[in-house]
Image 1 (cartoon, rainbow, N blue to C red):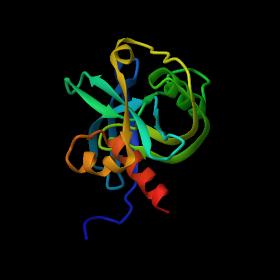
Image 2 (image 1 turned 30 degrees about the vertical axis):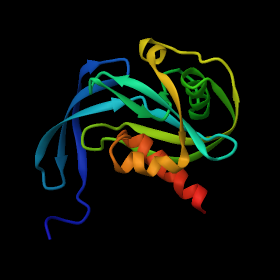
Image 3 (image 1 turned 120 degrees about the vertical axis):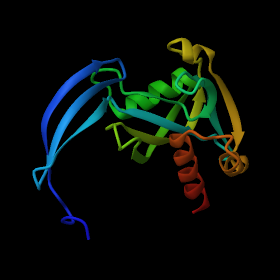
Image 4 (image 1 turned 45 degrees about the horizontal axis):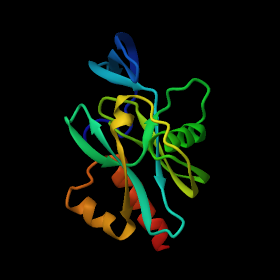
Length: 186
């Protein structure tokens, strides 16, 4: 056994290195209960919301194909977005992103899960909602990435294979779709 089962850690110092739109980067200094001092770079993130839009026959979901600059490629993923509007609740963000990216409004949004995405260096969390009772409206694209994205209707029966073969690789999308699969199976 190495150390105590629950050693205590204390933040000694935190210096802002970069302030950005989606996140801030901090250089932090910590100490543990033995007095050992160590440094970690930490990203503080606004948080995000993703939505699993399910059609009324419960046989299709609506995903977006979006170019992701960090990977320099297109991904098929759940509609999602930052919690970047001051005073906006998670539910309001989910409704906004669904309309902006897919062009639909959900009468029902049900919270599925809140995940932490990169615990080794970031505090980002993303809440995933199931959207049902959809009605269609015009997409309200916001920004160059949303203007170029496309909406794809994907059969529910194809999702497991798309995940298993690596066609869908985005973590929030995999989690949301697997939770949907579990929900519909019960």
